[in-house]
Amino acid sequence: MKLAYSFTTAIALSIFLLGCPQKALQFTGQPEDQVVVEGNDAVFTAFAEYLEVDEKFNTPIEYQWFHLPTGATTPNETAWEKGRTTFIVQDMTPEHEGEIWVDVRRRDEIVRSHIVTLTLYRVDLEALQEVANTLLEDFNSLDQNNDGALSFDEVSEVFNSLDFNVLDQNNNNEISQDELEDFIASGGEGEGEGEGEGEGEGEGEGEGEGEGEGEGEGE
Image (cartoon, rainbow, N blue to C red; front, side, top):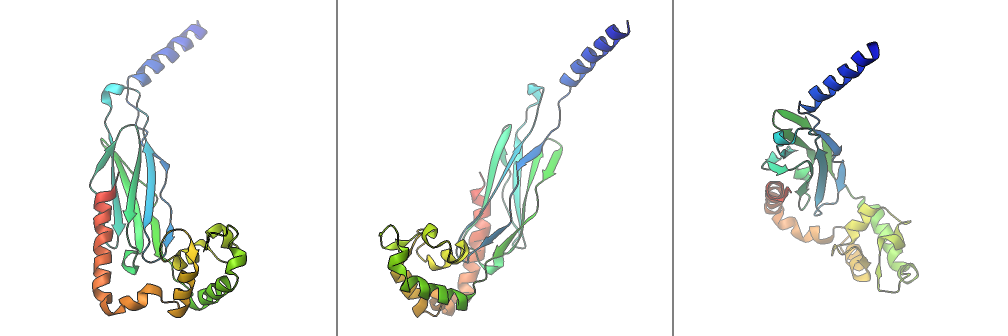
């Protein structure tokens, strides 16, 4: 009798749980801190999903990204069951440094992601000048593929990927002899030296693009 009672109770409890929609909104992938070279893009991604037993109560997940101190936000975007959401800050400038997160909502349930930081990479120009000179001197021996350019794999032991991005002025994932010569000739300032005259205008444009990207790039 005791066994029968326990079995009956277990069945009744299972039926009750199946009849109640379960709230289990959760992140399965969090955004991460990023350090970005000036002029490059920062891409933040998050994944969220929910467990819903009773399909008749299905409602989509809504996402909204926030970026401080710029104040940029994205419109609510929706996805069903499992979703990937992306926030892009274009043309990184010092004004874009700050905190970024995404809120996920489903009906009356809201979950906030980790709050991550976006940081501008500060280049040690003097040290990078020395690296550029070394790369130029040893260019032919480092160019293992003999394609007239250096990939990061070919020079990864010399410096980090962020410094590589600084020298890769064409943003094509390789460094040419011309790029090294231009960097050395400019004293490490690169194209930024020529932009100094219009610095105020350029910074304003960079900030506007970052905010606009947040509003339009969410998926």
